Image 1 (tube, rainbow, N blue to C red):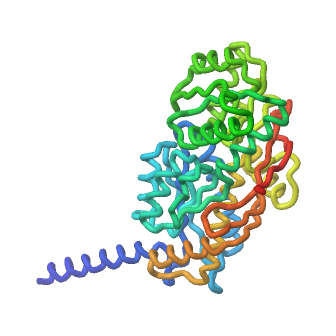
Image 2 (image 1 turned 135 degrees about the vertical axis):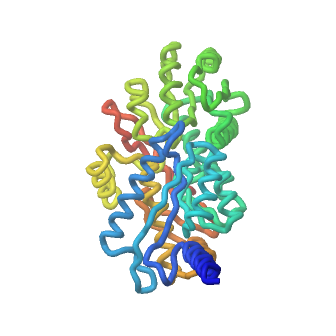
Image 3 (image 1 turned 45 degrees about the horizontal axis):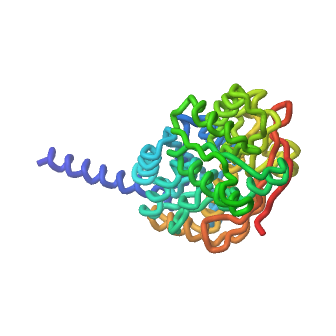
Length: 394
């Protein structure tokens, strides 16, 4: 009988501990958990690294000051990082682990739209707030009231590229090469093509060639494009693919300009691309060279700590994480029930009207998508991303 009593007591204790773990953060806990769904391995590991580095720097700042103050009490921050391997299915699994096992109050990431779209569906269905730093595809937040972003959208970025290239290159024709398996690349390529032909007439996109995510040889697509003699080539691909495409185009004799998109903006681009990318242009979220104020302070601190200049993903992660933390504070309290706390944070995110980010001021108008400016940068002979012009929504 005594043995049975001990077993019953142990079972009750296990259930109690399990219930406590489900709190995630609560009145009996001095810790708030935030999850990060990042591309730490796979095709674009520098993206995940930059996100994690920026998040860690922010967490260290807040915890060193005693924690995040919510409702008059300070809570230590615990950031939990899950690797999505830059794969759609892994991003869903990472989101589920953060939600169901790690019991986070909100999730930052994924970054790439290829991962952010399916992970966003999981977070929305699970009623867990998610903020993507870098995903510009409209589908990430569309009809998903629990999903937000810190960046502009591709329907805005596409016309930015069209108008800048028309003016800068005096271009009347263009060509596009893109990743057919990447929602971001495919979506932006299609937006660009529609906008270019609206401006310059049907048939003015003289080449529209696709490739796979794992492809290394782009000579077939580039040979067709070069034969069509476009005034420039638009490449809405990730930085690792860009380096191969630009180099191979030059090897095939192409001497014209390229126009890129924000996925060029990794700190690793110039390591991979070198002199082949010098002088090229791309649209992005901020320009590190010549930054001022809070943006320069972030860049200098990040550079000192991690020994390289932060790219747009790092800066956007700083902003996305601050959006989450501001919402936690605005909620005004930390509930014992994790589901109730997630609802408070989601509602607070939805009520943010303006936010001063280091990637620029954001205005929200009833959706998870900010209204904010883009910048176009040019790659200098020293490999720096130098500000060329700013383009804001009308």
